[in-house]
Amino acid sequence: MPDVTITVNGQRETRAVETRTLLVHFLREQLRLTGTHVGCDTSQCGACVVHLDGRSVKSCTILAVQADGAEVTTIEGIGTEEKLHPMQEAFRQHHGLQCGFCTPGMIMRAIDLVDRDPDADEKTVRHQLEGNFCRCTGYQNIVAAILAGAIAMRNQT
Amino acid sequence: MYQFEYHKPTSLAEALGLLAEDADAKLLAGGQTLIPTLRQRLVSPSALIDLAGVPELTGIGRSGELLSIGAMSRYAEIIESPMVRAIIPSLSRTVEVVGDPLVRNRGTIGGSLANNDPTADLTAAVLALDATVVTDRRSISADAFFVDLFETALEPCEILVRIEFPRPSRSAYIKFRNPASRYALVGVFVAEVAGRVRVAVTGAGPKVFRELMFEEALQRKFSPEAVKDLEVSASGLSSDLHASAEYRANLISVLARRAVSAALNEPSHGI
Image 1 (cartoon, one colour):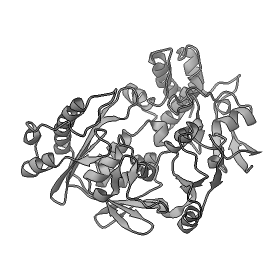
Image 2 (image 1 turned 60 degrees about the vertical axis):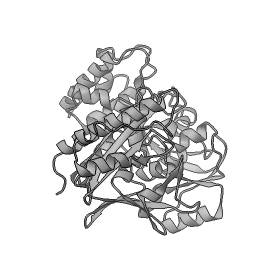
Image 3 (image 1 turned 180 degrees about the vertical axis):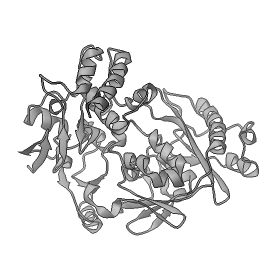
Image 4 (image 1 turned 135 degrees about the horizontal axis):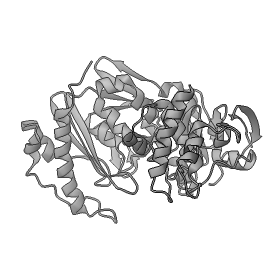
């Protein structure tokens, strides 16, 4: 089995993996970072979104070997229990979730979209969430949370 | 997923060597189709040859009147390229409606073209814009590249290197999405390149094709009215649970008119 070295949430991690190991399974099963979810198994739902070298991607559609040498940020890497990331705080404040299963992917996607387009309006946010499915909420509060999170992220910097 | 070997060559020559050695190996570009297909065990290659480390396949550049896009350019890179937006804005906008933003962060133009999915968006852009597909050994015209359902003119051991687009005088793509899958139920790309009008249709049949009747009408007069009364035959078009062949035929007419309007409204090309 090949070794891969991936910097996850700032920490270099080297593990032996099967070539067919998906990045999401590397994160969940080998590093026990279970905040990244597997929702659909068909590359559609976006529950598994992480940042790979600064871009949001579906970690269920990337092999761990493809991420060798890369930097990955997961939902565990953006805030602490004492101090949530502004986007996490916005989801809490605006009740941007119901069951919460899609939330890690939503938040990782939201941070990336706000990083690239800090002034995104509601229409843009909805369009940019096309790869993230929520089966509970109808997206209203998710979009409200992202718009508020964008302002909070702007004020933070 | 079945087991496979994994190789990550660092040059085109090395990639070609690996491919020639193993008839059952598959090339891995962005993986946004191949990895889901592997997961469903619909394919079981002996090895994957990851092209992400091959420098010859990257880069977006301009040579004379041609826009050249490396096969491993990811959709997001193409969208963010000011050069693409300046030279062929309709191409930027086409890439913006491929998949979803997460797919666009990984998927590549070369992967999409080599896969030749009948509902892909970029196949229509390449065919309508009369682009040239450049491989490690030859240049293939768009008209000759798309052979059949998921089949291209690429030889088993040939690697797509880049795509060269001529600059159109006007062009636009209109996609009618399947509301669930977001794939093109039908998409129509209209372009005028070097004085010739080309109309490419995706999603409607087993592969992307040109609608010659529309091209002739638009050649005479480039306006939505020119194609208003043209009826597309449903014969040979796809019919499935998403839409009947007749419905797709009607969509081709409707979308062609909209694409012509959009092309006329597009700010003038060029820099």
